[in-house]
Amino acid sequence: GQSNLQEITVSDYISSGGIFVIPSNFWIWSDSTSTPALIIDIPCTIKNNGYIIGKGGTGGAYSPSGSFSFTAGGAGGDAIKINSSVSNVTIINNSGAFIAGGGGGGGSSVAIQTLLIRVCWRWRCWWRCWW
Image (tube, rainbow, N blue to C red; front, side, top):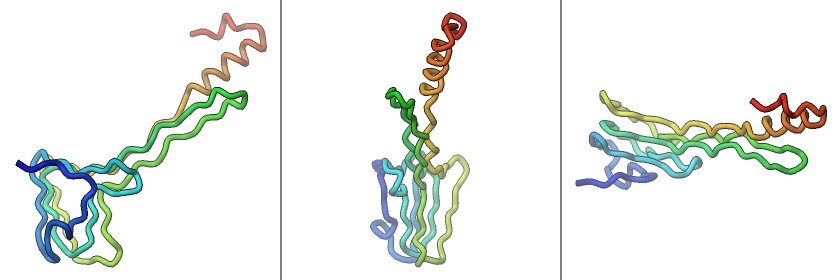
């Protein structure tokens, strides 16, 4: 059988004007938000029966330093990129198939909870802040 593929370019598998078929239950995926799972660099037809999946963004982070700093989650990556110089591309996404860009990473709530506890401590009501 075939193996799932990571970060591929269509011209490595078919010639210009050809048909690239992704079988059922087959994954084409990326592990980088800056590299799409599938790069289309030639005129072609894509028949998707499987899954083309971009990388999800990194989650937010919390730094317990005195400034209570935290970062938002990162943007997710693209599932498909069609090079700007390419035309005559057809994508057929058949029933049960998925094309999904990576979702953005979630934010951090730890900094907010820590801030509430410290504010309550300063007001000497820390016993009322626990929930």
